[in-house]
Image 1 (cartoon, rainbow, N blue to C red):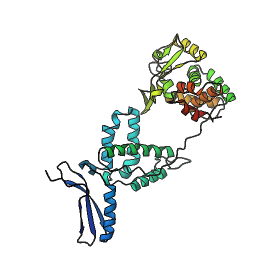
Image 2: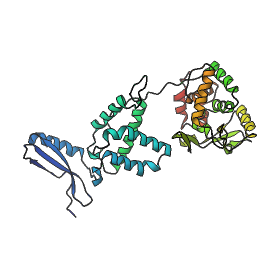
Image 3: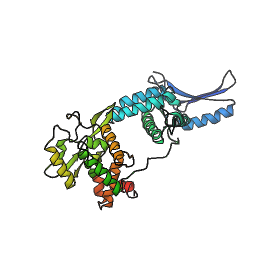
Image 4: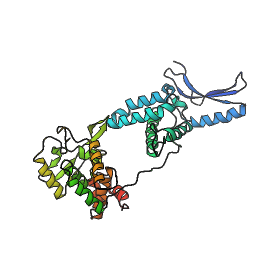
Length: 363
């Protein structure tokens, strides 16, 4: 085995082409040979200034031989060795889509150890302006701010793991500038609008129970679609929320709730508990809200979204998002005197302060 050279040890020399070259030891290969980082300058003074900067940047570094892999290679490794067992399958697939569509085309071939903050910032700027594959009638090819933020958070996590594995000295995503949170405004159905929507719902024999339950519980779309009869306690009128449906390649998968707090038990309003009780007497399968065409399957979240849009149009109401039904429930509950802590438990929020921050100012 080769003799290990201490980190920071290196060489300064003048090259045949007239430039000055310096190198420092930043780690060691498996056989003990040193891993160098090189800097160059037109004069010895220029070189020494750069060399001192590199020594400072690589202070206490002990990189491994794997630091020579490309960013794309590391991202594959991270996805399959780290992320695969820590996130839901649908989340993992979402990660893969972001990396394949936005990160690898721009920086996938870049050697991991030479990746800079400037490289990543240029990539963020590029995908922000030209990242949307299909031209949008309003935004053109500009990517949504939220998508750029997701790319940043994903890359930051992957490169943090690279630092911990001694493939990088520091995370180059630190110091980049990303768009601020720019969430779409919440849309709430006011009292009159809610009455119009409920009237439209009552006229729909197939979807009536589904949307009435949604408006009286504020469940997330995947949560209400994933309800089974085993979750309903007829005697006590309570509902256990313990799973959700995730969109998956045109279909769905059954998974855990969004957060730990999302697994919860809620007391149903008497009218909703009675609705459930009557519905259970004619149940045809394990799902509380089943697919109208295939009763052995749950209602598809996309079908629920499309039906909501149809009912809104029929009632001549604004074309809100499905999640805005949850906002509508929450806002009316607070206005009706439900305290923030109780509402937080119903919604599956981590704490009551988040509930207040989210809904206290919504009119």
